[in-house]
Image (cartoon, rainbow over all chains, first blue to last red; front, side):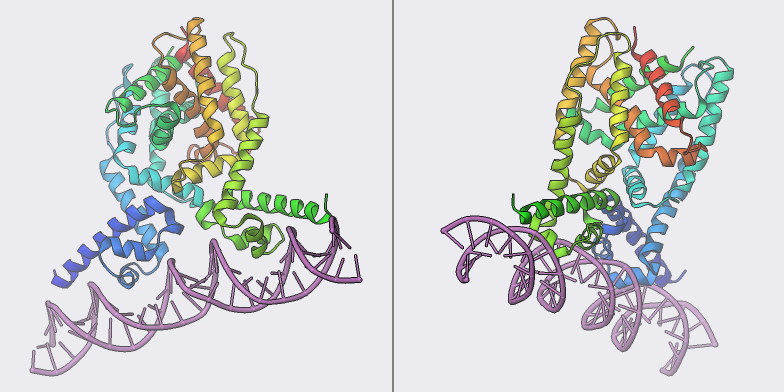
Length: 199
Length: 199
DNA sequence: TCAGTGACTAATCGATCGATTAGTCTCGTG
DNA sequence: CACGAGACTAATCGATCGATTAGTCACTGA
């Protein structure tokens, strides 16, 4: 491989890293190509050279998340014992907590009207729905629980905490630096969810 | 009152209405004074005449929400029977659903780093916390339920649906125009919450 | 009647935006 | 060694931003 090409790929990665951080922090509209260039320690024109337009750079950032997501997501289903809800919700919680940039980018995309964001997460809902139906047939979940709406409830418990953690800590006078706070919330939310759906 | 003053107040109201809609739609940064002026059918300079800076106009919009909120919120506590959780959560749900502009403005404010947004909602958490503690003493809620974290769970169930309704309908193939969808979700979420916390 | 106040407009300011241009420099290849 | 390709830079484009200026107009109170 060319030394030129190799350097170019390093530059592209640095630009993508800077763009991801900037888009996550400021959203698409307020993220300037100049700030991205400054963070990537390159020039603004070079970003246009590699990614053409700002929109295409944004889509490249999203694509990288999709690729990362496809690699990291678990491929095998969870066991069908009474703890399966806990393991699924915990998995979702840890995944979102490990990727704060993705969380913020999704929130920005929703407000900025970017509807075709994060296509990778499509499959998740179908697999989660299948888990719920299997658990219902196995008698772990009440029959009158709606499959899809229960998924919404589970997602709400995880995502709302991840998204609003700082605000909730301020409003409820919780210590945001408490290392056990996330675990305490998750245990509490899971306790309510499991008791709420079990037979 | 002056005819001048009266006309000025009408103009101020029209500007505030246009600003509220624009800030809710685009956020603070991306909302331009020119678009607000166009919606209010006035000139950009006139907005500066009445509200000085863009920041002060934004704060005037927030202040109007605070005033509206203080008027509309219920002043008397809910009854302490087993349905009290339902009535409180329903009240919160209806309140948020009736004010989509407030919901979006709050979401924008969180992402844009406006930490001192919506001071009016401070009191809500304290009163809701007091309700939970009273219900616990009355034996309606399990003793091992954490007061504050249960409030987070309740808020999550309501707010996540309000915020992500359109996205969730797309992801889960639900009909967003179904007039009974909101009610179905709320019933399902409340069923899980009530069963999850009751003794 | 007339001076003063405030609502309102047109024109324009400097700053910043995404994007483009022209050009330099460093390579691998014929 | 010569040359073309591609990585990269400096300078600048027109558009749009929030804000300001100078000025017109309607109305009130002395």
